Image (cartoon, rainbow, N blue to C red; front, side, top):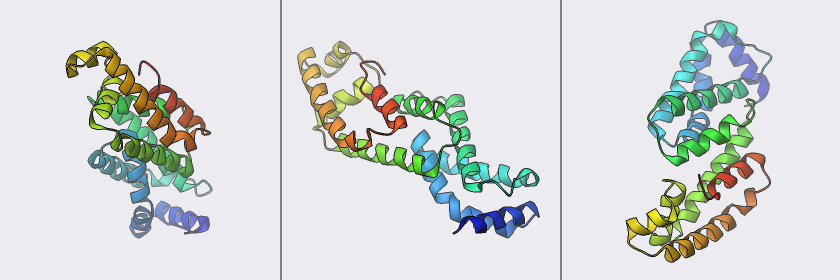
Length: 200
């Protein structure tokens, strides 16, 4: 759909046209839901967040600016709603904390393209983790996603600290290789710095 068509939808929504809202919903719900899921890592909650964003859009339809991109507006609203979700729910996973840092540090005008880049990063990270041997992946996740020190991992898995160090080195090499194509984007650099730091 071309940008002028989006402008027409916004104009109609401002005039209380529910069919135009439904058309906009059909066009953007899925990419917005996927975008939200990248940030909060919860498909069910991502769906609720995006539905709430569209409800707020309808309730504030009189304030919509026909001369501004509705797509950008909805992505920004979704981003802020996701950050609020991360702050106000009892999420303690390091994935959630990483994504909060990445998105809070980024521009409010996060483009759809940038959101797709982050989605690609998450996908490639998942692929890299899936390809790791079981113990190697477990050690990496305990270190980076649960924040355990090497000696804590060694104690939990009943292995030596040297084994933990060796397996972590192998995991980092594999993941860096998988994500190297993203290393030129600023949001990725921040995320990679967090993932590969000694302390998350």
